[in-house]
Image 1 (cartoon, rainbow over the protein chains, first blue to last red):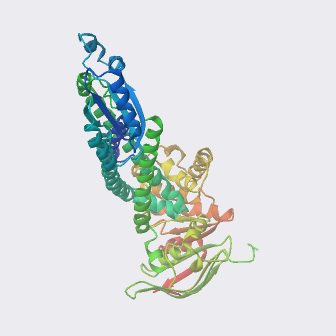
Image 2 (image 1 turned 180 degrees about the vertical axis):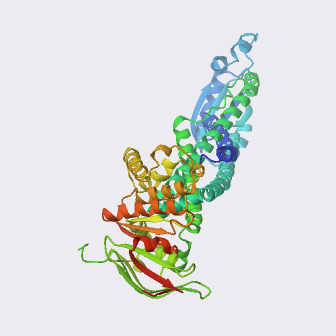
Image 3 (image 1 turned 30 degrees about the horizontal axis):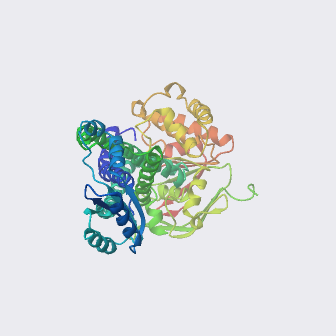
Length: 290
Length: 223
């Protein structure tokens, strides 16, 4: 191993770059999931009322809503409460206090019994026709779109990870093959002086696992660097929308799991390589005859 | 039980290589524990093949090769390392590792068989001392003279304290004085109970030592 440190280092970098792609995609996916998870996913309908409705009008609408089948809960959000809530949102406080009057309407927030989109659409049409209702919004639609995208994203990441996992195994396979060849004489002499195959194989397995682990580490470092860079550009964008867009990096447990998985793949590549290439050394004739 | 069985026993052993060349034809002999035996014959007579069969580097096409009563032909692959640990091998082509020091060449058999590095270092120095190379332990093998390289091979072969020492043309490239020294070393190992087999075509060595001789001619034993 000491004879070709540069080649070994180059291979570790190759593994790192190869792993950075699925790791980065996976990291982005996790962030998207956390973000979408902060939004309720059960179907919700918001009804925005016309301004200037009296208390009795509002009470009548509320009664009507409660009678409608398919509606689970009805919550009234008075315009003052809505404004107060908005004030608490990051970055919005200053904007709100600068307003002379409250631009928000009174609203009802409904949750539905049925989660399917058809029921939500039917109720949407129904509520649009109610007198005093200005606007109806089905809030769950975009969340579902994100969920659909997340499912697609997970599938793409899984495909990428599988493909690049194979690449990792192939790279270690080849690296170990070269190592076996450069240590050919040493392997032959070791066999002649009574070393067992297990003893001869062991350092190659370790090397494979280390290649995978360090490769995984470099992959994670690339992703960490990329996320830091992306966060620098996301921050101003986030300020505009009043959200915290920071991409968070993998948790410690995830880091360990990823490194361990890369190490296992490296070990596997080494195992396959050693199993195939060691037989060509020293004992060739023996194996041919047995 | 070890006393009663021969160290090495060949029974009707033949070795045919792919292509039809027959290196050994119906070879029979036994070597008792503690014996010193020369194997002679012209080049190509089958001396190297005979030694290689003992060390399970090659396999007999027919017949039985027994080492300490163990049938080599019936030996499974995972049993080979444990056979070789009882043998000290000195090869015609030396098989030294030129990318490491003299010391590391000698410790290799010990580290490969599970000795601690402290134990290996102690034993390696003892072996290097026996062959007179203790002051060269940090040297690279390539910087040694031919005779020194041969002594390094011997140190590596005896460091595991083998019961049987097999040497293939150990004096082939050495002048007479040096060959004498090497043979004296083998004699001293033999005196402490090691069974020694030396393959050589150098008849002058044999006439001086007058040991037991097994002569090979075209794969057959003639004496």
